[in-house]
Each structure stands twice: as structure tokens, then as C-alpha cells.
Image: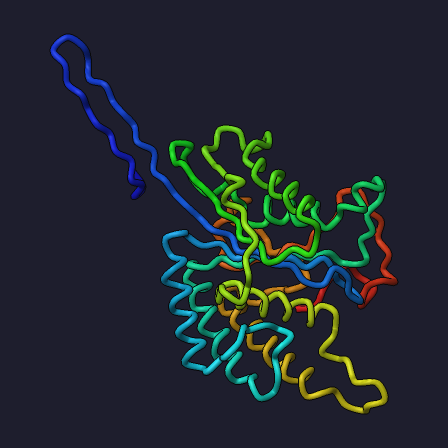
Length: 310
């Protein structure tokens, strides 16, 4: 039955027909998530996530940690720490990281907004809670969770590990409550999917190499989409060495993405040529979040068209 561990047990009786007990296959997944710049020159509200099977977590973390040790990374990998002296090491680590992405063992999702799209009709509460609303939309929809199983007989549990959120305990607790209720939304009826609130936790990225790789990817996309690769120090005629190093690392990451998806456009939403289930099956995807009710101000874009760079 499609490789699923579905067991049927027959109980025989001389006075009654056979009784069949159906044991549902249990599947467990983990989502590591992070966020970056809320505002930028052209793009903002960057959110990123990595999905993997729970059974793979320990092995992948161990392999990534070993790679860091081999490269003599003494501290946490972060986009903000990229320097010319460490550029070659960052490239090698990210090349290794993308072997897990290309194989589908790690599925990466990046979401952002584009400044030319201005949301209309929002209440004060919606504006005040925009960060959490967007984060919620990202975790609910970017991974295509509702397409995670072909059968309602499978019982699927998700754990969500959030990098440290800069807000009050009360707001974070409310956010976790909303996330745990995602499977109860109308469009997910009939799915045996759970996100227990006890499985949603804040984590320290310094202890998770998977999350550190995501930080570098997220930072690279924010860097390039907002044209930070063009920036020069005040009064200088040329770009700084760190800016040049970061552009080189971005280009290396973009090359690895294009090995998976040729001609990938980092500034737009990745297509769903085979239907919405692609959101679950693809190894790497971007989502340019556009409010349903919005106006377009092209003066806030890089060019006179609502598109992003490649």
C-alpha cells in the first residue's frame, strides 16, 4: 500500500465474520523556523523554515556539526558573521548543506513581502500584530502541510522549533496556541494531522546547525533582494570587503538553488506546475506574499514592474 506501514490484523471467530483492525501509520516531522529583516529598501518581512522527518534530525545535525568541526568553525554560523577570511569555509559548508536540500531530506521555504504591494483595509489590531499574522501564514501555507499525506489513515504530527522571537511571553504563548489550531481550519478537515502546543518550542540557533544554515540562506536572500550588494561605506568609492564576500556567498547559494530549479527567480513565488501539492514536495521554494486587498506603488520598486531579481 504505497510503502506505508499499514497493518491489518484479522481476528477469526466461529460465530462471527472476521474483524479487521487498522493501525494508522505514524509520521513525525519537524519545522525549524526563523525570521529576518521586517523592512528593507524593496522587500521586507522575511521568514524562513526547514522541514525534515523527525527521524532524520539527529543524523543530519551530527553530519552538519562534523562538517563545521572539519572547517574549524568555532562559533555559530550566521549571515552577519560572513567575512572575507571565512568566505571559503561558508561556501563549503553551504555546498554541503544543499546536498541535503537537493536530496529532499531538508526542505527549505523562504517568504517575504515586496514594498510595492501595500495592504489596504487593515484594522489597528491587524497592523499591530502583522508580524505574528505573517509568521502564521508562513507556517500554515509555505510548506503545503495539508498535502503531507495521501491518506487520512496516516497520523501525522508536526513539531515547530522557533528561533528566539523578540516579544513578550504572553504574545508568544498566544502565537503557539494559534499555530496548534492550524489543523482545525476548515480546508484541512478529514486530515489526521496534529501540531500539539507542547511540540512548539523556542530554540537557540547556536545549538542547531540546521537552523544556522537557514539563517545564512535567509540572510543571503534579504541581502540580494534589497540590493545590499551595491552598498558602499559612506564617503567610499568602492564596496567594502565584507559586502563583496557576502555577494560571493549569495551567488554560490543561488547556483546551488539553480542546480535544483534552473532559472530560479528569487524575487517571485515559485510555481506549482503539478498543482498545489508541489508546495509539499519541492525541495526549495520562495513565496512572495501579496495581501489580498492591496494597491500597487511602483515608485517603491527597483523598476517599473512588480517583479524581483533573479
